[in-house]
Image (cartoon, rainbow, N blue to C red; front, side, top):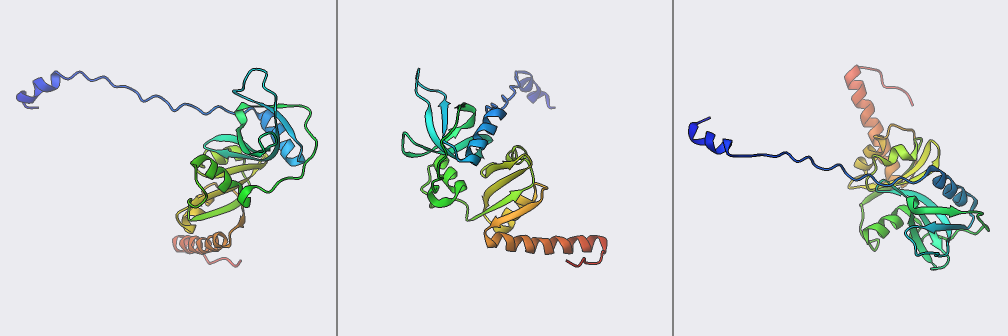
Length: 220
């Protein structure tokens, strides 16, 4: 280094400051998730304490409808009987009360699409925006594993190793490729465009495999 620059460099005092780790999201208790899922499955009215709450506040009375994941957090989508409106509750702030019941007839969720409903609630959208391509599938994979790699999608637990995934993309091939990255068996719920592009990609991947290995094309 030239002498005329060395004294300037020597005068620098540099302190490296590590970027703080991202604050982890509070995790919902597994027992709470099981209780919420059971109430949803049985269509039973649920009484719950929701923090933070005023001192000696009465429990909330809700008709639970869906348990979903948004932004790495669990949420309960429910009809609030006292407020006569739909609400989303963070599961890590819920303390269910027992017993549950009575049973209720599920209401129709506005728009009929839980993914669009939750996305609109959190994004402040009127439903006019969103991804141009949106699809719904069932994956043979745990919801907890899928949610780690789903930023803007909706993950709904259907069982220990099965979940519903609703997500969007700018293109149908991009959406299908993103869904295929979960390395799990897939059942397509819809729409038809998603099924069509999966078939197109299957043919494309098959041709790529044959060109690399010289294998004979299998008969389906």
